[in-house]
Image (cartoon, rainbow, N blue to C red):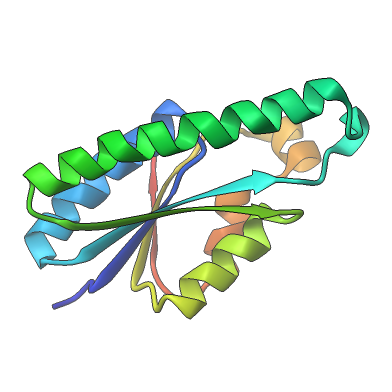
Length: 142
């Protein structure tokens, strides 16, 4: 078995939803376990810990588990073992890298938002950062 444990970092975007579909097909093909991870960024930046920030975090904490239930149902229909987790951290990249090491992930399948040029230079790219910090293959889905 080439890929025993596949991870899909999930940020709610259409890119990460597509990454789930690709990862599910691969998990089915290789009889792999499929994990999804959402990391909620607790470094509030310029928002501070305002009521608006607290509402946004609360909304994410309620929405993501509902979305994970849908993914779990799809995986169950495909007869693929599925696990999901939501973590909070000040560093999304470090958390995903650490998670992938601790869970012995063999492949990370993740969406890319296609940020290029000045935006990438200023904002950076979680996908790019993870791809350069993990020892397992990273499949980037656009």
